[in-house]
Amino acid sequence: MSNDSPQAPTPVVPSGVEGLSFESSAIHAGQRPDATLGAVMAPIVLSSTFAQVSPGRPGPFEYSRCGNPTRAALETCIATLESGRFGFAYSSGCAAVNNVLELLGPNEQLICCDDVYGGTFRLFEHVAQQRNVTTAYVDYTHPERLEQAITPKTRMVWVESPTNPLLKVFDLAAIAEVCRQRGLWMVVDNTFASPALQRPLEVGASIVLHSTTKYLNGHSDVIGGAVVTNDEALAKRIAFLQNALGSVPSPFDCYLVLRGIKTLPLRMREHSRIALEIATRLEQTPGVRKVLYPGLASHPQYELAKRQMPQGAGGVVSFEIEGGEKSAHAFLMALRLFTLAESLGGIESLAEHPATMTHASVPKEKREAVGISDGMIRLAVGIENLEDLWKDLAQAIAKARK
Image (tube, rainbow, N blue to C red; front, side, top):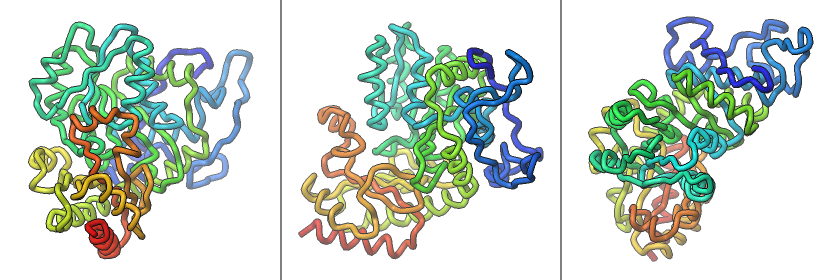
């Protein structure tokens, strides 16, 4: 892509071999043995610039902000897994969110689910708002409220499913149909599920977004983001913005995410299996007030989750502990195997307190209005031994009750 060209990138080719399964695509999509040296793994191309055939006639790559071979492999791989034609990688999930927000013009509105990642909320309220882009927050578990919130200024509908940290599940196909009828862009942050569990483009979403920091990478050693679409006009604009804004990942970070994606199907099965068992046990544990996990029959959207994410409900479990913030802090400080840290999606288990950590940027009254209490804890369940994890949780709950 030329340094100044707004042209959309070439649509991705699903893989070197047609008809591959999801598991095989996770390993091979966008990656063939290097033509020069035969390297099986995608080479890390660190060059910032590339030789041109003649003045103004670059080859496939010109300048690494505009495009890079390692990044192109990652963008092709993620797009393939999301059943998309155009993929874009970013230096962080927030950079990906900001790039998508730039699609909106002044005085336009977006509608967002009322339970959303704190970093996304911060961008909506303190960055987009400076351009007079307003946001209305709606609980999509009541479909009629989305319809009621649409105004002549509405241009985009933003969805997390499952949400962060309440793990609400929304009917993506139904929301996509509303957006189609009204001519709105539907953006789905698919970070919590990953394409291993659901693929929103297949049911009509306009854009899928990821923090690749989380499940796609899977090893807690990269910050990154991604955007995927099937809409060529949107892709053309997103490509221009990616180049103009310049929030792109390094080739080494792209390589690390590519490495992580290769085990995504295996990891998501384990995350889901272990998280379901932990959520089930937590429901039966004295001192636990409420457990939120889409794989539990007690979850309000359990039937929808089974239908929409048939391969599993993911690795995040949220619960309320009796005793409020004091007990939550005591529980978190008593953990030994779970690490007190933000983020999720890595192979190691983490625990955090949304009210003072991931969602501290959300005003207290807004947190409480949507159900994020001071006693809520969010677990990012890794793939350690189930019994080791449960022993740690049980002893921490027992100490918190004292």
